[in-house]
Amino acid sequence: MSHGDHVTQMPQGFVSTATTGDVITAIENEDRRMFAVQFHPEVAHTPAGSEILRNFVFNICGCKGDWTASSFIADEIAKIRETVGDKDTVICGLSGGVDSTVAAMLVHEAIGERQRCIFVNNGLLRANEFEDTLRLYRDTMKLNVTGVDASAEFYADLAGVSDPEKKRKAIGARFIRVFEDAAKTGEKAKWLVQGTLYPDVIESVSLRGASVTIKTHHNVGGLPEKMDLKLIEPLRELFKDEVRLIGRDLKVPDEILRRHPFPGPGLAVRILGEVTPEKVAILQKADRIFIEELKDSGLYDEVWQAFAVLLPVQSVGVMGDFRTYEQAAALRAVTSTDGMTADWARLPHDFLARVSSRITSEVRGINRIVYDISSKPPGTIEWE
Ligand code: XMP
Picture 1 (cartoon, protein in one colour):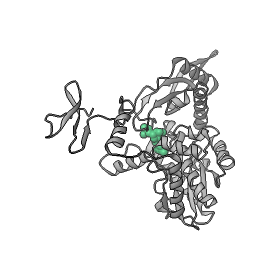
Picture 2: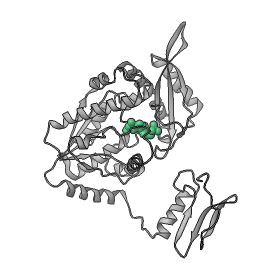
Picture 3: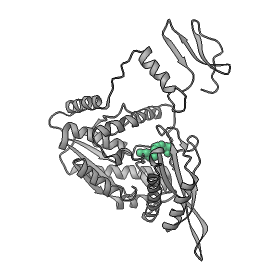
Picture 4: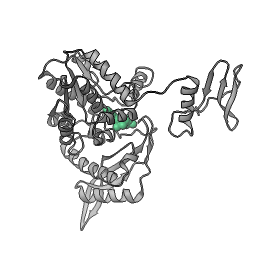
């Protein structure tokens, strides 16, 4: 319900078709073919919400529902070929995530080696992620990809920076420089492939409007104009679950398709305060244990996103006969359908106990674990 709004008087010719208590929640005018609801049929928690939408789209609007992953792929390949032509080259930044990977695979199907992919290690990825993903891109997916390890440059830029937005800006600016340098080594590209999804399109529309920027997402911002590139965004009308379907058809490895979303600035926004290579190494170990345990317990696919956060708080602990004074880490796991709203995941206590005990015994530098029980809103998914 949109709290605060209610029907005080029915418009002429309308009848009420649903109520909550004595509040009118749906009205219609058959003759004029107008139907209105005052709740959110699209959110996952509304009972029969999808059925309401299905009825509207099929029975009222008369749509056919013949969209399939393979028809989308065929159409999109034809469109990309037509857009790019027979000679132009395109460039694509891969992040290791679902969106950029599926976008690159689509373009690969359309123009093959004329797409050059660049995968940057910013030193803020999860443990072994750069090496493992690069191997998948190259050997399994046969993409034309260059891996660039720029960790040292990113760390240098982040030295002494604690403010979250300044971190994002520093990482974004460095990313552009690294990407530009890597792009320069080959034939000049005219096009840039981006894995923009429909929710990104909606978010950037509202960002241009009245609502304020909560976090500056999308660290590739500025790249197309700066490098004089035109955009190819084959996924811009799709939601994440549709992208996964398409990825499956394109034989993108399951490991990438099932991967939780991961922010562009990576672990930098999960290390509160200044980022150092030492803190990254500590957090990578904790994160790896958490993710490993989620996968082993069959819980990984149940949550939208799960990760550890390194807190700038030291507390007293005891290890054997010794007193310790080390950092605390928070575990965060959320359920969500699109990342815009989220609820904290009710992970079993025994599971949390196991993760906590493994991290505190296996990771030097962390002696205390807390579990984040905030929803979004008012919390955001990431801590920074
Ligand atoms: P928040 O923290 O805003 O996150 O609730 C919503 C989703 O966006 C991801 N996220 C980012 N992704 N660059 C990105 O590419 C960013 O700076 C960034 N910040 C948050 C977050 O992981 C979640 O999936």
